[in-house]
Every structure is written in structure tokens, then in C-alpha cells.
Length: 212
Image 1 (cartoon, rainbow, N blue to C red):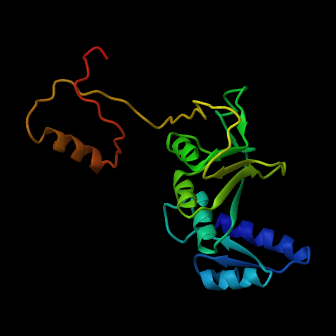
Image 2 (tube, rainbow, N blue to C red; image 1 turned 90 degrees about the horizontal axis):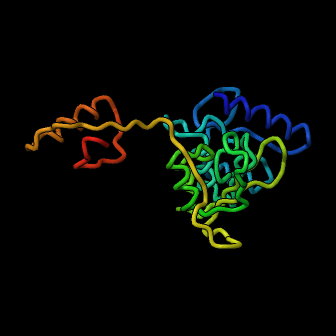
Image 3 (spheres, rainbow, N blue to C red; image 1 turned 60 degrees about the vertical axis):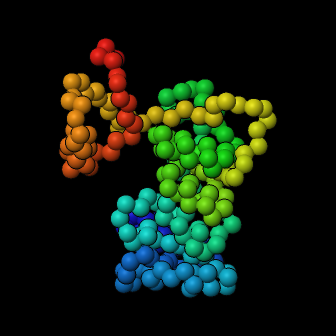
């Protein structure tokens, strides 16, 4: 609903400026906007209308980044601009590292790896979708209007770099199990218990020393 409210406010601004604009929503909301239809959305834009998409995709577990990438693919957009509370993609979290440098361009692969490892600039699913359908992404600030970071197929590097960025994920726990019997079925019982609590296992290391 928050995205729908934002769409209504932005739509009103466009209309005050004399532009044609309309809101399309992923779910039926009477008096707010028209139900989203890809073909109609493309027709409106081809006729010079600014179309604002609200309510995400209408399905749970979709981030706003991924919803925006999906709509960009569906309407065959040339580029997707994602305005956020940060200037672009940095080599590290600028709130923690004062010397972090902003990337003016970065490859899909680099951005996908950083997003998967904890960088919160973009959701990794949105990067995957943009890469698959060759949608150029740009991450920029919603406050300054300055150019941000372009995410594309191949980023131009002035010189060879071995590290693009550093990311962190604080929602990971490491634990070791010692003394498990080496018999069939033990691993199944362990992972079955983890699955019941919806705990995702990212890495498994066997034969770990007792002192580690």
C-alpha cells in the first residue's frame, strides 16, 4: 500500500506539471488506479502517458527492487533507475568505512555477488532478472539528482582490480557439531530438524578439528 500511496502523490505532481499520468496497480483498488495489464501499460506509454506501477507484483516475498525489475522487463524498458537513500554502489558500506569509494559502473556479476553476500543496495533477484533480460540498471540518490552507479554486462575498468567491494551479512550463525555417529541417517535427521524451523544452510564443512 505504501507504493500505491507514493504513486498517487507522484501522479498528482505530473498532472500539475501538465503531463498525462495514470496509476496502475497489481491488485484491484477501486478509485485508486487501473488494474495492471502489460499490453495496456505499453499502449499508454506509447501515447505519451506516464504510467506509475503500484502495489508491487500483487504476490508476497517480492522486494520492491525485484518488482521494479519485473515491470521493466514486461514493458520492455531500456533502463531501470532505482532511486534510493544512497548515491550508488560503494566498495564498502560508507556508513562504516569512511574511505569507501563509489563505483560509477559495475558488472551484473559483481553486483549479484555483492548482493548475495550481504550488500543491501539491491536485492539479488532484481539483478538476476536485469541480467537475464539485458535491462540496464542505475542506482542513484533520490535526494541529490547526481549520477549514480550503472549496473551493466561489462564494466569498464581503468586498471585491473582484484577486489570490487566488501559486504557483510549479520544474519549468519556458525556452529559445530562434535561427536556425531558416522552412521546412515544422521545427516537426514539433522537437516530435517533444521528444515522444520526453516533454517537455511549455506555451507557445510566436515572433519573440522575440535579446537576450531
